Length: 313
Image (tube, rainbow, N blue to C red; front, side, top):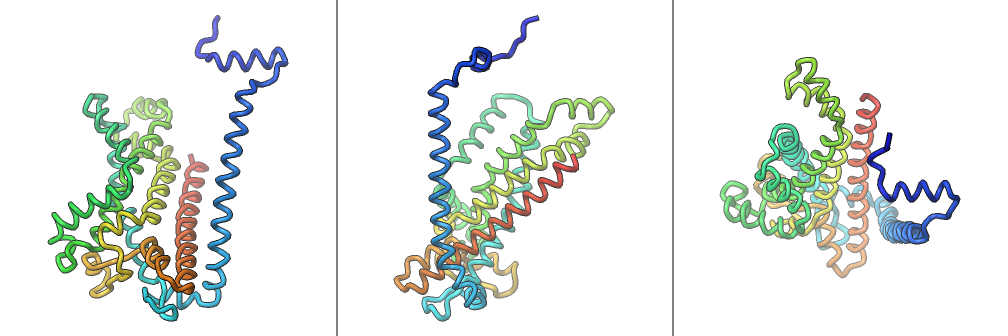
């Protein structure tokens, strides 16, 4: 019986193995080029991290209380990153509460419920295109819709340039990433799992809830972490919606702060790096290291949860 599904590349590799011929020189050169690019990228990353850590670690060790406890100031002895740190945490909460549930829900509908129609394919294509749109475009959209059109709701006292506007803009920006990664995770679940659930009389939602989602959870968590990491590191859309003052209002509690001015670590870093004083440049390096550590712990949490689901299923 003839074996089907074997590609020409597989046949060539088998023939080379049987005849003892060497690997294709073009394949070897291409592998070496890829390896070289990986080494260069890692080397650049290591150099950048070393330069940041060399300045930031001594500052955080000796003056960590002042750096983490003080708000924005143009005076080095009074300057800190507290407002930016709190603002970034607020933005991360926005992504967790808005972008992640909406993205997962939309992906479940598109993959498990929607029929393969022209409209569905059109929506899928546009979602993938939106994932590649530059961040500044989302900033312009957020300024036009959330700050100008809905300014009376998002923050009438500050012209709509509020924390609520920033959170909505960032959530909108990472929403396509959550949808796409969740769709890929759902597609990776074997069809036999669904068929087995239907075979014992389970409804579609019971199959999705009890079988599909647990098996797709590692991929969904990975996509959610990528979305949160991008949200924490973006600056351009936040600048467009008003996060340039280095000020975060805390009057009236967390809910009242949503409609007031805000800042975040990326915009605070941008502000400090523009200052001519070396002490503020060092403070920017400390803020960069804190932001990297935040992203690291978010990734670590997702990895632990993913490994737990993989062991369970």
